[in-house]
Length: 466
Image (cartoon, rainbow, N blue to C red):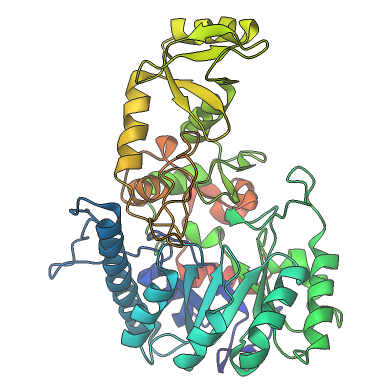
């Protein structure tokens, strides 16, 4: 007997089991269509989704323009075409069952234009849009223009309160649900505030109760909360199902759908997820978005940690203890270090990390000449995939398309690494996003002997509570 009952989501009664949207091709039309066909809510990502040629072959997102602004226009065209493509695939595979949602990041470059571009061409195919990574005030206005429901992703009642008071109260009839995404347990980018300690996870229950209290205060008693982040199975949350302080509840699964036959991620990525141990997924703040994010601790993350470690403060002229010359910059400029830091730098240089790169914080990091060249090339090739990027100093809000700060070599090109990993590059040397519960693949008997279920089999398993 199933533990959960159907719930009204985006205008239809469906299983309260929602596929979490994951960008750059990870949640696509194939995975979301299968999820909807099994009676749940499938979610394809519209964050630079894949397109295909007439033979069904993936079209690489190659940028030909010479300027960042022109490459940004290419990116938006790719994003719209990819989103429309995945919506059509999902619609066909869903065979009229379940619901289909589209996921976007509010902080992605051209988010509003991409939303309009996709929704205009997919009327009747998409039933809802989820959106997080920022404060999507205009989400309600955009969704209501296309008569579809919207689902903001928040990590606190305070965040929802700000969205409601500023914008959502005017279009409450299209608010399909509120996604509470646990900022300590979710995969990808996380909504930790400056007042929250990334090392001290909080119990989600009182935070969700507070969110429900606020929603009820605004007359949203029947609008479901969608619990996301750290959700592995219904048994873990059974006490929430009939809790009046929680109200109608659905559950979003981001990590488990990665290991299904319909999941488009490479087999090497699936095998890596199935071999993780508790603690192998870490919060870090290397993302060019400036948000914390959760990823598998692999060689990619290790290299970023080492860049951070090989870092010293400098001055441009002798000041106080900073009076020892250093000439390891790419352009031969002289920096002044303390005597102790100069000793550390000399050791790094002997080990091959002989090139200094300036950060926006009056520090320099030391990398190999090859890595310095790669960083500079990636920064120069920026296509504006974020509304603002600390790695390349791109910004969509400034007329000159710059943040006003120096580009930060301690970060990375997120578009490049996510495109590489989904399309077959070695996962150890690329960013591998994952929720913190991924270590449970190795412990769950459902996945014994490397078993990879279909989406239908996974949903049947979830309905049993396991």
